Picture 1 (cartoon, rainbow, N blue to C red):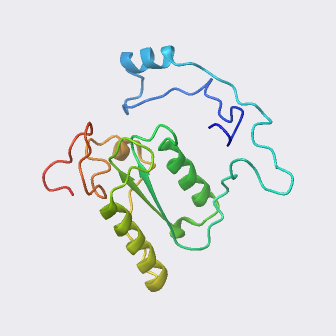
Picture 2: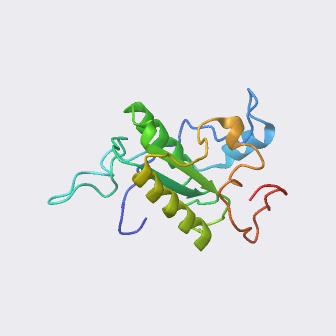
Length: 170
């Protein structure tokens, strides 16, 4: 993140990455985790800056207005786990009623098509004006996120290299 955060913010030394929901990691998951580089967080990676806040905002979940997030599932720049962390922070503050989250099946960072962006903005504006919270995706339940059709509800176009949503799904 050149020019944004010069040092490592994350620590993955004790993280076991999983894509299945069984009680024990599969041999493929064990192999995958064994091959990953492990890094420790630099405690001074995100300090307050003179005359500013921080390199990256601290997520505390203190929302008091309608917030609709959209996240592409193939984004390795800002992994989908950030949506899960945001949900937990918002729920932890008792503000879950203000957050709707949507997953989109796309390979890149913010790789939304016009129809997805327009729909999201329209739904957010309608929520603000009417008080009716729009639909969103469950981002925390492992079996839901692991479903092969996850992300189809709000995906409006199939992208090259991404499995198409089954018939009957958008």
